[in-house]
Image (cartoon, rainbow, N blue to C red; front, side, top):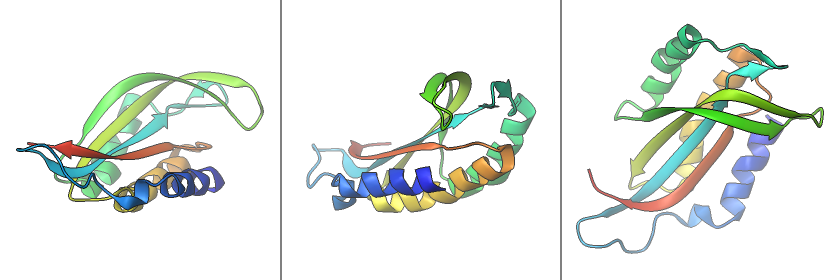
Length: 136
């Protein structure tokens, strides 16, 4: 939880809380692009298999973002609390929230990240949120 709190505070302190761009080009509307990076290993062992991810997506992610989302397969690398570099398969969740700001995106992603960490014993989930212009 400490890492998530620090990440959310950093997002807000960096000026993301100001919200979407003041103006977007014709035909585009302001919003936020939010991303969450979910590692699938713990202590070098894959703990989130395809069935586990699919259940998490159905039970947690989809209800949190019923209007739509994108999930991509990724390969991640990071330095954990032990100081060792870990490489692992990951999932990247991308959501676009029309009319939202970074604080609202963080509020919506926080419980998803928290549930993932608890369910799969993960140390952290990286969250990003940035103002954008969009059109569907």
